[in-house]
Image (cartoon, rainbow, N blue to C red):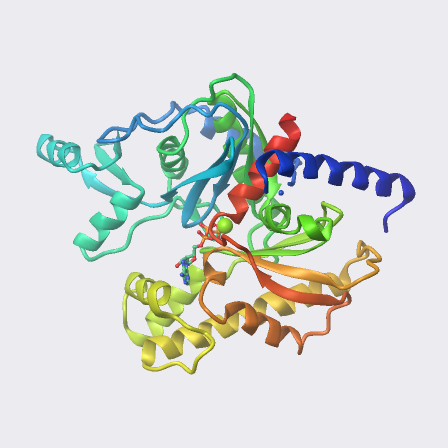
Length: 395
Ligand SMILES: Nc1ncnc2c1ncn2[C@@H]1O[C@H](COP(=O)(O)OP(=O)(O)OP(=O)(O)O)[C@@H](O)[C@H]1O
Ligand SMILES: [Mg+2]
């Protein structure tokens, strides 16, 4: 429940957010770590490792931001957003890598082919979109430093890869202590313990601090709300459907009242549809991104499998939403129906938001929903929302 003091804080906060939005003509959150001792100690040790020096054509082209930054550290992509006078500039990189053994010959090849890499333990770590090209050449899959939204415990150099990928997008800030706001997932409903999320948040915080920023975390679903729901007083449900997870946030007047995540999204759809049709997940992903239309009857095995697994992800997402809202004692009394805003790459196929809308009719939520909308720029809503948060904090 929301008391009078909280209510006036909320209005104040909404106003500050709107000021930040106006200055960039376009949305906020915070995370606030509650570190568990062990995961913080581990995070400190991990972040204390030396920074990675990337090599290759264009490796030193990332600019030094002259103002606040919004950063989306996703399972599939890392995106950085900055406010450039009259527009928001976003730059993105694939959050993936591929390793080859170190040799003089391969170094020459990499250097002469526009490939960004770093060297560690007798291996060249090829990163970003270059890694995807390499994996396709070798007819295999790239590796990912982040799995289902969180730093992968099975990739020992995962943090170095994330650092390297980020350093292709942004450099140290021009002004020491510049605010950077980065997206973090909500607690996974059926996933790992709270410690995994704390570790993820802390390790990224420490790395960004080492770079010279003042970092702050923002829930990814909340970032979607900040980016898209200014006209609704930042009240509604933001859902980011990404590669590794679906992140959900119920925001009331810009406060994230309820957040959670479900570790099922684009990667799950690719993997399951691939297994069902004996095709590699990477190939299924290409077909999905180029052709999938959820508003039409599917034709062929791959499309049929994609429809089936989309249905499963949407059903899981909405039944989880129903379960979390129904069991919460924090639900605010909201006087009118609120919108659901969808963002993230997995929300992009034609017909996706109408499908969510149709399934929602069968789910009994304890709050009324006015409509289901797709974000104007689904792949960039998190970074833009994080930028709005960063600008509000900096201003
Ligand atoms: N046009 C498209 N149609 C269908 N799926 C798409 C499209 N474009 C991207 N995707 C899918 O969206 C997912 C990536 O989305 P996004 O970049 O929002 O995720 P992320 O933020 O990196 O991951 P997460 O938020 O789960 O950590 C991938 O599964 C990709 O295949
Ligand atoms: Mg995301």
